[in-house]
Figure 1: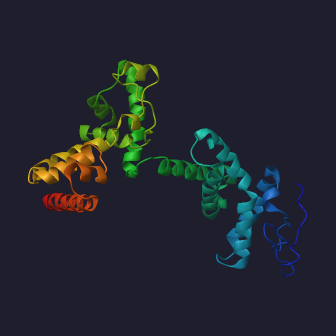
Figure 2 (figure 1 turned 180 degrees about the vertical axis):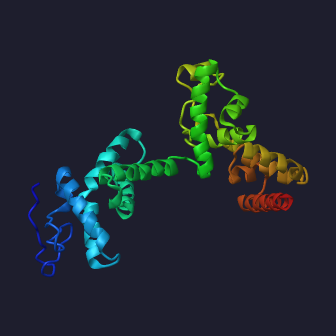
Length: 300
């Protein structure tokens, strides 16, 4: 085995490893350069030596931290190897998956027992894979549901696949309950919870439409089928509320409103039509509108 040369950070105290590097470390352990750059073959041999020494050191000491951190860095390639199996899951970034897998690696280092004579790689992979699987299980649900229902969804999916092949039809709730040894209520609860695994997009076209043109075009999305506020409806409501108050006005007031807003005449023309000044028309119009406004607000 070729051991990488030792690298020291000039800014660090004499003999102290710099960031991302390991110095000569402890007596009895070979010097390690950049632990993350060690080949997998070398990492396997060095891991065994460092695990033996880790078990001899008191937890919390600087020496224990050095050996433990070196073990983590040396075995990050193992984490990346397991993480690559989940590259096509489409959930999250690889960086997040590697970070989660590293948590599993740390647990494996802390729990490894040399007396069992099991290869560390064989011991660590289930821990790394388990943490990544737990990450997907806890984060891929669109709606958070209890863990027991998440697990029940998996059971139901497997049972359905088995029963479809056995019965040559889609299994009923009773079929699923009998196969799983659960009550019908539990099965129904699991089926309802499963609907929260993935949320459908509101922009997904809906082909279940009576509109032939929309169906041929691929269907309309949900927002396309939702009504919008019609400004004309508010106008209709205002007119209906205004009618009884218009009846309370005198003839001149109603005439001025009709000429101004119905015939769209200017105040000067209205004055000439009625034989009064434009200023008088303006005062009458303002007073009439104020009267109607106050009465409509009082109704509200």
